[in-house]
Image: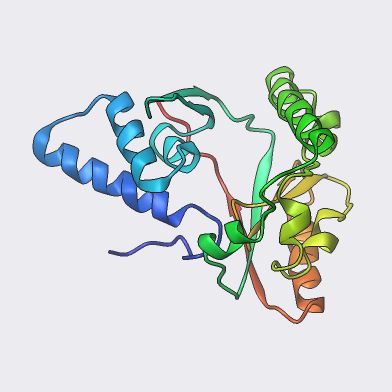
Length: 212
């Protein structure tokens, strides 16, 4: 197997492998219902988000029912918003990244994140990009993971013309920057911030796969 997705980097390499396995299965036994693939993938991955994005493309909102089945609603990703991903030369197993999270969270943090998920989706739908930086503020997982992801606190605080915001990619240690312009300068800013923390990083500009 050859893949350009770095392992243990928060970029969904395991979900991509599962999706590839499903496509290989379909090449032998014929197309499968997407609901069946999502449920099977969720049983393997433990959650549907990465696999749903790999199978459906674009922006995907997921919800797992109590019986294990998955609701997945895809929508187009705005072409005006570009994504830069900076991956430091350190690996972080998902198991370790999950283990650092608290078992309980304050009600205020839960409410804050629910508000911002709704804000994020509506801002993308209405193309109101001015509020996206606020929608990216997280209180549930990024504060804890600042202890294990190099320079994460400084990366989240970056400001630059054309940069909408920075967030942790998956469970890390990669970070994703959403931008509208100045890609070269923002890319350099990401790698410089990692370098100041003593870590080399590779930055990629990614396109969003849109299903047909």
